[in-house]
Amino acid sequence: MLTPTNPPSIPPRAAADADGLHPLKVACSSCNLRELCLPVGLSGADLQRLDGLVATRRAVPRGQTLFRIGDPFKAVYAVRTGFFKTRVSAEDGRDQVTGFQMAGELLGLDGISTDRHSCDAVALEDSQVCTIPYEDLESLSREFTELQHQFHKIMSREIVRDHGVMLLLGSMRAEERLAAFLLNLTKRLQARGFSPSALVLRMTREEIGSYLGLKLETVSRTFSKFQDDGVLEVKQRQIRVLDQAALQRLVNSPSC
Image (cartoon, rainbow, N blue to C red):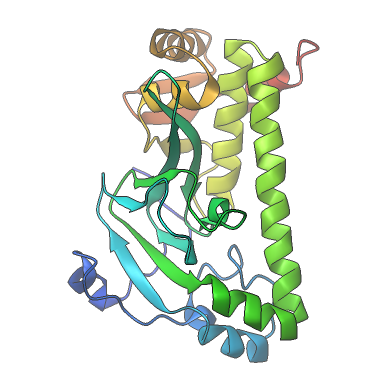
């Protein structure tokens, strides 16, 4: 199991919100994810102003959707606990995974341009999100320049991540794609206080393949090769990185 050095604190009332029907009020100023989320770098006084922006906290049980393609866009969501995937439907009817989001990251930015969501957001485990009404976010950002600056940085981060996925799909071999994916995942988890070398995959190998543009068999075969080569220790969804330098060499190889 993943053991964070600074485990996230979950309020006692969180269990009462398990059905998502009784959303709870939450304050950014007291959240231990504030250095990863929208409030990063804000002063104490500014955080108090932001507390009024976050409307509620909502529980999303594993397998359920936070929003679906075509739903009206009304809010962005900060992942407080848990793990999500975003997906779209391909022309052949199959689901295409477009991203994985964890605690401290935002969901819902896809709906800004058209006022409707362009993907599904599905919880990969029991999760909680903070609901941030977009109209309120826009209004406060106009008078609160630091918040506007941070929101733009988050949007830029998403654009850079999308470009990274395009690079994965366009120029990398299967081993390079999986290596880049694992390095990115461990880096993001480490920023949240988790081990930089041990992780539990919340997504299936099929979902990883969908995201990386690889067949399930290729993903499974590549995991096995990494284990045979002493790069990883693989026990179902539990992964331990034994040779991070080897993964980095793959990502930095000339064929990339």
